[in-house]
Image (cartoon, rainbow, N blue to C red; front, side, top):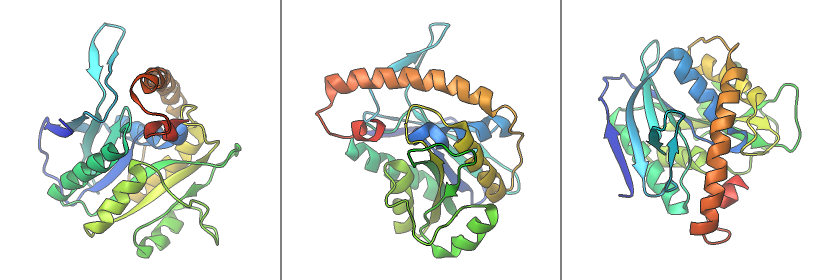
Length: 255
């Protein structure tokens, strides 16, 4: 097994928007997208397992196990949406490419019209109101992103986007699918969750997706996620010492 998908159902969707929110810097994208899934009561329809995820399972308070996976949810309204969330990104560079290839294959099967990736952009300091930055595959998206509140400077400070949030846009562009990232400014620490940055990304997402959810519970959601992500962090660091060569793959992403 390299990357396998298991469908729980195959929903009928009309040119959905693909929205990615995997763990990363500040866990901004993971918080924002998971919160939307919960509040919109989006329905899980598929899960991806991969030998490029860490070889561990999570055990809950009832002693039940759940494997690490990337899960797909759908929501139907004014705009149909496919949400992509997960417990972890791959641990190997090849895994990133294989996962993104699989996600694009899924997207093409559902005839997605647009890809939105989310994450954090480390600036090394804390802001009372973080900006949301963006990079896009098609400059035609600039006007609507500005209207939604995305911050653009004369010179783009982003430089590069590591991991699924960047590669997925590149793979989509190769297939003729427009896309853009929404990156909330954050301190720059992967495992320290940043609710402020996530909330700003959420506000932009709601405008672009034409959905509306109450943000009053975001702090509660962040605290729950912090416990979960801290467990993942501890376990992955232990496994990194056992299985990974120095300087390779995911260690560069989470350190």
